[in-house]
Image (tube, rainbow, N blue to C red):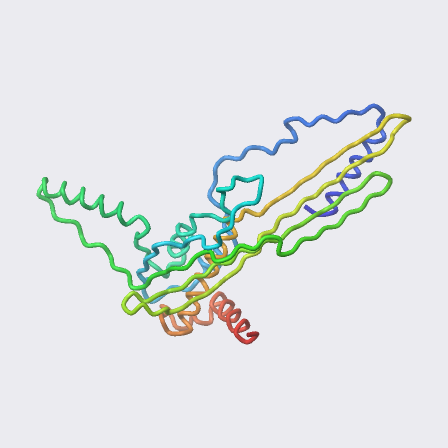
Length: 284
């Protein structure tokens, strides 16, 4: 929502102010239309994830958890038990690992449920004299980490103007979420690569209104407003996807894993993310 739109609202209010005895009613037209369920919209990081060059072979990884380590709760009037960030980050990490084409995730978060079902299936196979179940896949790398920080009101500001009772104002706020991700060798426990990424969460509010006398003892007051808060869970997902791409690029640079085609090292995505890491290292 731009300031131009705000002034359009004010202009509408001015036109209404020229009508004597006018009344404004807020009806169903002011209520946003209801949308049908859709797939979660993709962000810029997902396109980068899908554009990664292919690996020499997928890496079997286990994800036991990706916890919220911030301890942050939503401010009032939200429930005191409502957390500021999503508690389903492990699902986002597993999906990102699958989408990348570099990793083959194995189920570990609900391992006990999986083992229970395998016991039931094994008992059923014995009764029907069928072959036993194949063994579970063992992972070679453990992906772990968590949401390590959530900072509110990192930056706030706004602007406004009023002239003869007609005006508009705009406010914005920036929060920030940070995730940490590392790859661990399950044979030795060595941390192979570790990255930390941050994503800004934008919120803004736009208000406009008219407050003036149109005739003697006739006061006109009109208000209109709009606010938008960027979904925090989508920002967490973008930060996780970005961290995974950085982890892959870092592993390629260190020789931890290999590309299917060595010339793909010059691909735009790998160059961009490796360049960002080198710029950060040089700045430090």
